[in-house]
Length: 175
Image 1: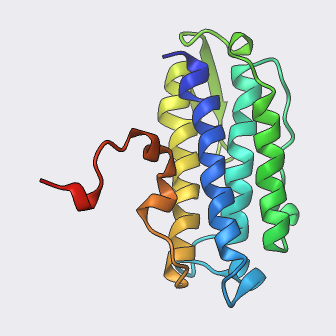
Image 2: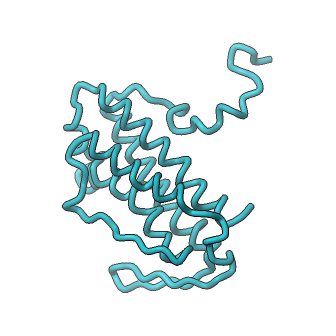
C-alpha cells in the first residue's frame, strides 16, 4: 500500500460519506438549522465539523506534497447544507488532482506544531496514520453522530458504503 492509498485515497472516499450524509440532511425537517447542532455544549457544531472534514485533507497536502492549501476559518463555516456540500465537493475535487508520485516518501520526517505550542516530529507515514486520519475520522464521526442524534435516518451503511462491493452474502442469506 502506498502513502497515497493510505491518505489521499482514504480522504477522498470518506468525503463521499460526508457528502451523502449532508444530502440526506437536506430532507430533514430542521434543514439548515442542523448546522448549529452540537452533541454537547462544549463541542463544536455540525457546521464546524464539516469545515474540519473539508480542511483536514487539504492541511495534509503541504506536508505530503509540494502543494499549498489555505485552511477555511471559523467565519467560513457553512451557513446552509448546500454550502456544506459545496465545501466538501471542493476538497474532493482538489484531492482528485493529486497523483501518487507527488507524495513524499513514507519515511520522510515531518514536524507538526499545534497552536498550544506543542510540537511533534514523525515520519510522513506516522503523520498520516497517527495524526491526520485520526483527526479526520473524529470530525467525520462527530458529524455523523450529530445528524443521528437529530433523528436523521442513517445507519452504519451510510458511514461505510465503501464496503458494499465486498458483500458476498447478505443478512437474509445468513447460515
